Amino acid sequence: RMIPGTIHIGYVHPGTVHEQFMVSVTQAFKYSDRIIGMTGSKSARQFVARNDIIREFLEGEAEWLIQIDTDMTFDMTAIDDIVRAAVQADARAAAGLCFIYDQNENKVLPNIFIWNEDEKDYDLEKDYEEDSQFWCHATGSAFLLLHRSLLEELGDPWHQNWVSHPDTGKPMGHDISLCHRIWTETGEMVLYCSDIKIGHIKSFVVNEDTYRAYRKATDG
Image 1 (tube, rainbow, N blue to C red):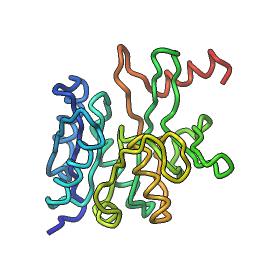
Image 2 (cartoon, rainbow, N blue to C red):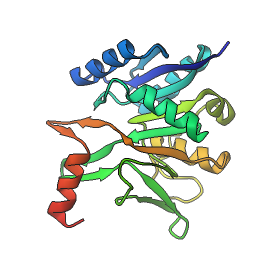
Image 3 (cartoon, one colour):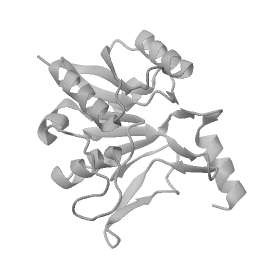
C-alpha cells in the first residue's frame, strides 16, 4: 500500500560516502516527516546499483524516490521542496540544480540536457534560467526525483547499459538513458528546478557560484 506524499532516498556508493552528504541526509530526516526509508547500493556497475535501488523502492510504501549521488550536499528542505515543486507542476520526474566538474579540463557545466533533433543527440543547456523551474529532456541522477507510477510504467530495467544508444548510435550513459526512456516512451520531460541548489563535492564544493565564475573567466 502506497503512503501518499512519502519519500524514499536511494544512493549508490563505493563503500563510503562523503561526510557532507551524510550531514545533508541526516538534516533532511530531522526536518521532514515525509521521508520514510533509505536504500544504499554498491556495485562496480552503477546502472546495476541504481536498478537495485528502484526495485527495493517499489517493494516499499513510499510514493516518491529521490536518487542522490553521495558526493552531493544540499539544504535540509531540498527534498521536500522538490516534491512540492513536482506536485505543483504535475511532474513525475524532477531534478535539482547540479553541476558537472571536469577536473582534467577544469570545466564546470550544468547537468541539463536538451534533445537536438537535427543531430539526434543531447545538447548541454549552458544558459539556463536561474532561480526558476523549466522542462528539460534529460539530466543525471545526482538529485533526481521519480514517481512510483512512472517507474512502474517504464518497467525493469530502468537504467540501461548503453555504451551508445541503439537507435542513434550516439554515446549515452545510464543516467541519460533513463531520462531518454521517460520522454520517448511517456512523452513527459523532467522538471528542472534551478531554484533548488545542490552542491557537488570535490576538493571544493562545485555550485552555481562556481559556474558563474567559470563562465566569467572563460567568456561563456
